[in-house]
Length: 258
Length: 163
Image (tube, rainbow over all chains, first blue to last red; front, side, top):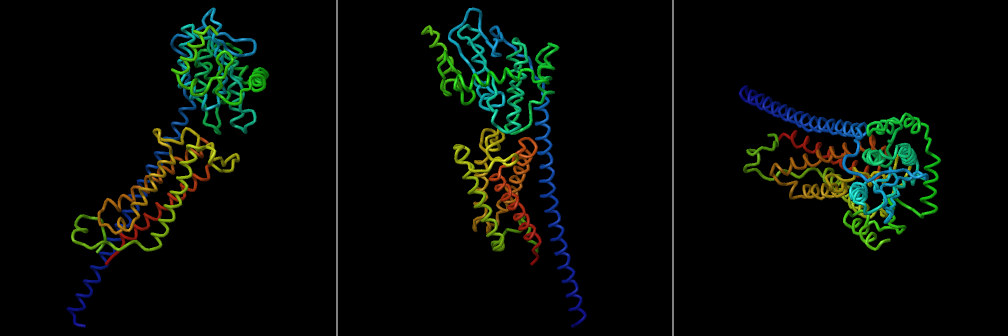
C-alpha cells in the first residue's frame, strides 16, 4: 500500500472512530435526559403524594358556621336536631364514620338536611354506629374509635365534629382516626370539656356504641350505611343521595301530616 | 452516519429499518397484556362484582380499585390505562415503526415516560397511603415499566447505530 493510501485509510479510521464516539455521546445524552427527567419528576410525584397525605391527616377541623336547629343528645346516645316543637316528620340517619358512601351522602345532602331542620320541616336523628365490627383492622378500629369519640362530644358541637370526621376519613384499609387526632379535632371545633380527652382515650363510650350498633343491626334491620328512615320508612338511595329528592320526600311527608 | 432524528436526517432518506423482532414481539405482548388487564379493570370499575382477587392484609384489589385514588379528575384509572395501551399499540404498528416522522419516535418515549410516572404515583399511593397492593394493577404496572425499558433500549440502539 502506498503512503498516500495508508494516510487515507488512517484518516477514514479516525473519521469512523469520531462518528462512533459521537454516537456513544448521543447515547449517553439520551440516557441522561430521559432517565434523569423521569427520576426527577418521579421524586416530585412521590414528595407531593406524601405532603398532601400528611396535610390531610394533620389538617385542622373547623367549627360549623351558619344556622343550625338546636341539638340535643338522647339517652341512647343519638343526637336530635330539630326546632322546638317539631317532632314530625322524623328523619333518622344511620352512619359509620369510616364509610365512604356516608361521606358522599354528607357531601351531597348534608347541607339540605341541616336546612330542612332549620326551617322546622323535619326532626333529624343522627344514629352513628359501628357497622364494620366484622371487618379487619384498620377498618374495624377506625370505625369503632370514631363512633366512640363522636359520642364523647357535647351535643352542641356534634355537627362540627361529625363534619370533621368525614373530612378526615381515612381511605378504606388505611390507618387513621388516631386518638391524638380525635382529641385534637375536638379541641379545634371548640370542645372545652375537661373529660373529653379522657373519654376518647379510654373509650368510655364503647358500651353505648355497642348498644347503638345492636339497635341498628338487630332492631332496625340496617345492613349498610348510610341508611335513612323517614317516619320509619327506609328511603331509597336515589332519594337520600339527591338533595331535591330528599327535600321533596320530607316536604311530602310533612304535608301529609305524618 | 448516526441515525439522529433531525429534519435534515430524514430529508430525502429511505425509511429506517424496523426494530429487531425481539423488540416488536416483546412490545406487542406487553401492550396486549396491559390492554387485556385494563379492559378487565375497567369492567370491574363499573361492576365491582366482576373483580376476582384474593384479599389479605396487604393484597386487596377491591380496597385499591374503590379508593378515592381510583380516578383522576373524574376519569377512572383503568380507562386511562386503556387509552394508554390503545395509543401505544398505534405507535407500535409497522407503519409507525417505519415512519421517519420524529414525533412518532419521541411519542413512544414520551408515552412510556408518562406511563412510568403514573406507575410511580399509583405504587406510592398503594404503599404509603392505602397499605394495600392490587395484583391486577401490579400487572399493568409491570407491563408499563418493561415497555419503558424496551423503548429506551430501542432508542439507545438506534442512536448508537453507525453506518
